[in-house]
Length: 487
Image (cartoon, rainbow, N blue to C red):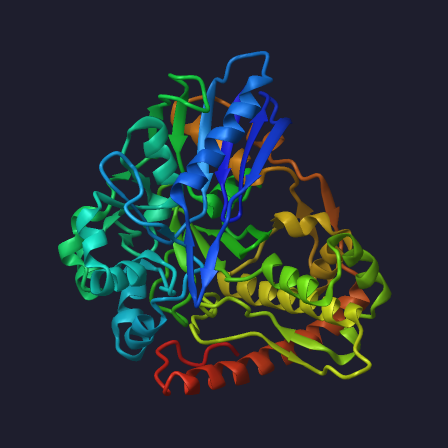
């Protein structure tokens, strides 16, 4: 048996797979987010306790031994720990917006653009560069007390094994040179963090391994650390051929396309180039800030239950009777396929005749338009796989297929945990049948008539987005280094 662990933003999951890739069992526990005034933090002890609990529950019912485990989890943010991996302060989430003014200044100068040209990573408020720089200015004592500024999964790995490390995928944002696969000291200096270089964990290439010391998994269980959740999902969905892509319809709407071309000069600085375990291959990633979280907000606001969504989508016509949603609900704005820290959601076309179904469908359409924008920017040319919580809605999946105008390979189950196991298998030299492990459970085809309608709707979406970006930049005082490339 093989165990995959996925330490998500709001949910910690662990799954058991047999040698054929069949998901045998899964356990999950929710973890809280502390959201206030643009600050988004998490309690590290709560997160780690949830990991231990799901692992203990999961493995207590197994009849055979755990051959090895793979670990993945949310990326970005800053998880400050001491030498034992214990929290120095609450973790700062990737959703955090406290550093937006600092990022505004970098975007108004050449810092933002130059960092992208060196690392392939377009910074956003919740990524480690701005967060560490903010802490250095406002909470320097926290940095002084810390031994390491880790990522989520790396904190868990250190607590489980005692090993201090990260991997090339997490280090890709924003300090890693994707050509040398090592930290870029010039980037650290540009961000004013050269004197904090010692806080960065050693980059294990390939991923670090260790043996668990308990609790959760049996002591001595082999475990591999990484990659983080986006590239882990790509592995779990079988997305490795250049041009093929993955759309993760989760809290974060993430679009990834495998590529063997590293182009850091062309186009608007946006998204990131994630280094993978395969040298010479990257994932061109456009991880938008809000996915299912946008729909969740609308459902809470309108009082609609999740189990009602499919019926409302079926009963409401394409185009949502003129209601339109720009789904940029995150307190830190948007990070892909452009960076606008001050961008906010907009609802238009609403009247006294607007129904709950119109609002729900318009939100689902807006998220799908955002996905198309991200996938086009990432360079999708091949097959497209989809996974994540949003795939549990058949009606929304059909809407996605229509908006994207292409078939969707649906990969169900704990795809991130599956990818973590496949990464660990490569690290431990265990030969698994990757094609069988990543076989899609269904293929959703687009409707040609609705696809044509949505093609026009997408053009209108980009026009509204361009206007909204202009307003966001004007609100920031006119300084916007990201340019006007939304169109």
